[in-house]
Image (cartoon, rainbow, N blue to C red; front, side, top):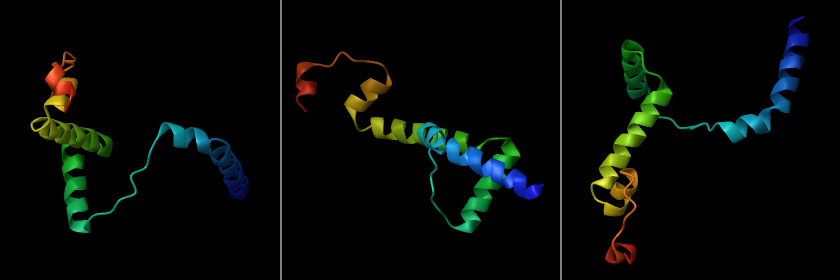
Length: 89
C-alpha cells in the first residue's frame, strides 16, 4: 500500500511540477546554524512565518534603499509626477 501511495504522489508531483515552479520560488540559501536556530526560535516565539520574515526584510531594505534613491522613493510612495531633470538621471 505504501509503495502505491508513493507512485501516486510521484505522478501528481511530476504532473504539477511546472505549475508549482511558475507559482512559487525556493530560496536555496544557507547560513550559520546558530543564526538560523536563533531566527527560528524568534519566529516560533512570536508566531511569524519565514515568508513574513522575508517580506518584512525586503520591505525594510526597500525603505533603506529609497532613502538614497529619490526615484525609488517616489515609486514606492505612488508618486509618479517626475520633474524633467529627474527623468534625465
